[in-house]
Length: 242
Image (cartoon, rainbow, N blue to C red; front, side):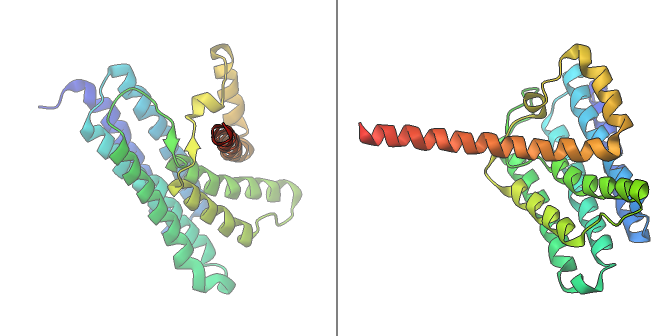
């Protein structure tokens, strides 16, 4: 018999998986806008299931595995199919459509496998080895959102397929890298009193703010990692000289 406290977080995780599935079907049908927003809603569910589990102290190995399988669909396969659907519209890139789309999905799944191997189910939030897969998906869809928004306002073609391919591949590489990515709460230090206004502003400007937030998260962590490597090298050089 399943304890009641596990029902809510697992139900939210199931909703995450459903939204990822709906994104895939939308991409296949050519409904790119729907596919993008379903991935975003899956991100919301992914954030909520963790918060719900911590609130109810409902951590389990089953929940961890279920969450990872759902993330593989919503943030691995769904963005991959979205990338495939978009790149298929450009005959010039027909030869690299499958490789680019598959590389993203492959790296996303490998990222989740690594996460499961090195972590156990608990309320402790450790830093990540490699970029978290939800931010990988965010970088892909946020570029699509901001270019669509800018095109609507300025009547100019901002979307660049080469840039989109580069963003997809870079996101894939960062997910399987050994670069340390801090948890979001360590990067975005928002005082509790400003949290509600911050969320309202983000949601109200989501087509722009998601791009800013997701790429800021990447740049911040790369800069932090660079400083760490620099300090480590300086420390090692100092020990060698001594």
